[in-house]
Structure formats: C-alpha cells, structure tokens
Length: 67
Image (cartoon, rainbow, N blue to C red; front, side, top):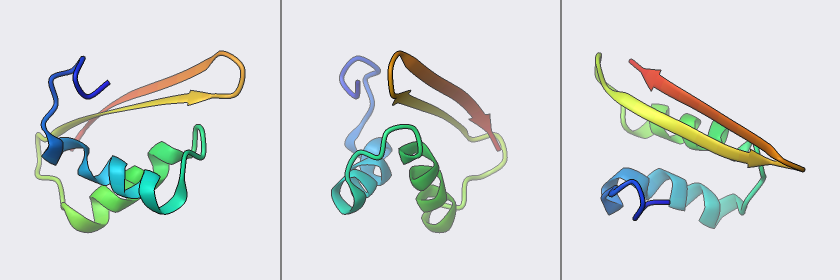
C-alpha cells in the first residue's frame, strides 16, 4: 500500500509502530494509529490523513481526515 500511494517512510511510522506493538487487530487498528498520531504528532489545521482498514469478510473502511 505504501508503494502504491508513494508514501514516505515517515508517513507510515505510526502504522508500523502500532502493528509492531499490537499486531493486526483488523478494523480497530486504524483507531490505534489515530490515537498515536494525535498523541505524538499534533496535526496542524489543514493537515490531511487517510485511514484504510479491512475487516472480517469483505469489509473495507475508509476515511479522509482534515484537521
């Protein structure tokens, strides 16, 4: 996914941290990543983020966030 979206390592560091510390929790993983971003990055007004998650069965969740 990182390569397909041409994201830099810096842009996926919180995702990697959550996966390393908790493993893949399916859909809730993105909420853990969001919590880490909010605690460590303090996004600025106008910053954008996209959250993508796969759940059980054929469930795909997406959200575009703008601070």
